[in-house]
Length: 71
Image (cartoon, rainbow, N blue to C red; front, side):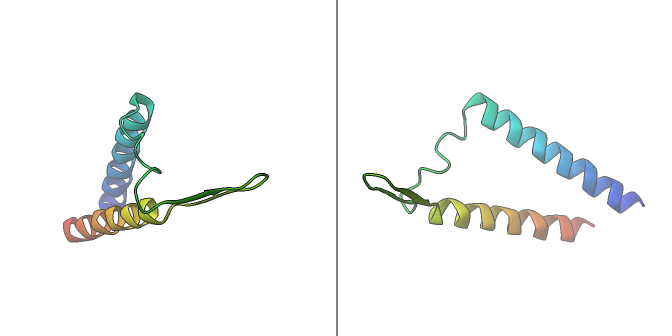
């Protein structure tokens, strides 16, 4: 049970850090990257965050790789 507990503690710490960054406004650029598509018509608004989701996917994959190597 120790590896599971350690993984939960690390995940909780990461969530706390992300929460503090969002609260402080340090992540206000996320969602406004150059590869994010935004189209606004007269009655329609479409937003497709390609670049933001690609960045998030890379970061989560890297974090999973590091956690897998540690445990």
